[in-house]
Amino acid sequence: MEHVLPKLPYSYDALEPYIDARTMEIHYTKHHQAYITNLNAAIKDDANLLELSVEQLVSNLYKVPENIRTIVRNHGGGHANHSFFWPILKKDVEPRGDVLTAIEKQLNGFEAFKTSFTQAAIKQFGSGWAWLVVNGEQLEIVSTSNQDSPLSAGRIPLLGLDVWEHAYYLLYQNRRPEYVNAFFNVINWDMVNEHYVAAVG
Ligand code: MN
Image (tube, rainbow, N blue to C red):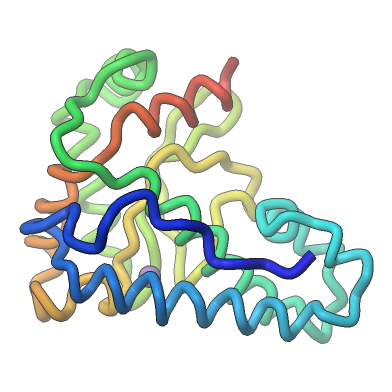
């Protein structure tokens, strides 16, 4: 199947002032679309790969022929990560649900989680992502480089933050910590909780 850009579940300005409309438009229509276009071009002649969802592709990179594995890792990862990212963004949702209980129990409370996640996002050198993932039933905070997906390491993502400069440079320039801090105002905790319940249920 040919991969297509998923519908953005809100308008470009929905996350203002934390994420600006111009960044959202370029990020979604140009960057995300480019990952999809490049992924489709790489797998277009491989009937086996065409049957897999992008999540299945990045979860099973060993199944991808070596000559296109890096392209699938980068562009398939880019498609999977951005498809995951858009729906976990929403304003005015308080942390709640089973995932909040798990964060409080396993990660020494919500404030400690916030500090650890922020550090993971700030310290990721160059392009990449910070994640809250679940490994079995254990919550972990990790970062990945470039467009690597936690799925490739057998982790299920619950929350992710894109720290590529394209995600924040227009509004925040070099001030990644401000962008990371603002991100905590646009987390759709109900969606994060859905991911958690699906992963451990
Ligand atoms: Mn991005």
